[in-house]
Length: 190
Length: 190
DNA sequence: CCTACCGATCGGTAGG
DNA sequence: CCTACCGATCGGTAGG
Image 1 (cartoon, rainbow over the protein chains, first blue to last red):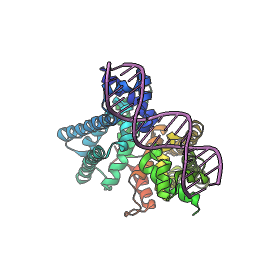
Image 2: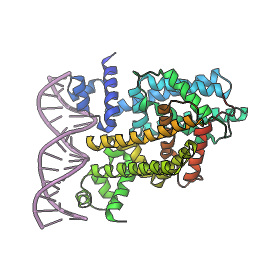
Image 3: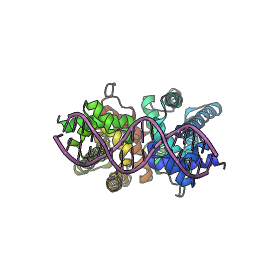
Image 4: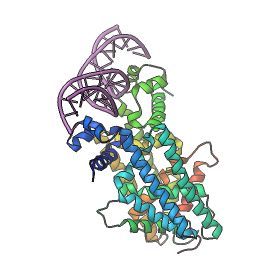
């Protein structure tokens, strides 16, 4: 791990706990064992830290949906693979994922608009998969916007409660989510 | 509306946009058309604004679950009424609800611990309802912790996308969520 | 990576 | 509700 990566990793941990605004360069420096001014030999600004994590993760989600659409053809398969990949990306670095979820709105205007647009694109791809499932006759005739947003919020909330030290692997979480999203709570169809 | 209520309402709108840390007394004063120092004739501190909204809403959720448990007896009924009340509480003041969701972690230690404990209690009550549904034979044998957290995240994400000016009423949103949570996406049982 | 420092801004108080 | 102000702290720079 380079010094720069070490700085990013510690910054993410602190941002997760204190929020972007609550991460001060002096606090970060203290955790690194150096002076605040020295941080600027490795990164150019506090904003850069946030931009890096937000766009790194956004690009992972983009790749995942591209791959899923390339490989699988029917909607239930596409959806279950995307859920799996989504959860694996989130769980690969929970500090990064939590910051991605909570702090993106503190991006400066230009990167923020770019970020929101990438996020909307991902949401659209999920809507398309759901619509495909309806057209195929696999899914109920739900509103795709509502369904996509509800699905995404269920997936993303994993960062709030998942503990790598617990009993569930990311794959098992993905399977439970898939089951829940596909079949719901009720034993009989209503 | 008293001056104090007006201050709270404007503070919530600003907190929603800028976050708790990004709400400055000078910005709030500007929106009120007074000087920053004058705010302190109406409230005692910035923290008070956050505590008020967090605990006001927490107490509404607590009342809702008490009422639902008092009136209804089987789990599907309890759950659907709680979803309805939950969404109505959220949509009654979207600024307050958004701040409640995102900014509670900036509460000072003592109120924060209190808040988290109230939140856990609400979560436990939802787990009990789900467990009841399993025992009754109405619900699938899911892990109640996982199901409660996933359900709650789906409900709470309504604050991110609900627009009072749109076509859906809060009641209709609640009905869609109920349907989604109970029957899932899939047409046939898997 | 450090010392020394800058201008800006913060929440809040004193006194009227 | 205002003027005047406080000590603390912020992100970041200059120069070594």
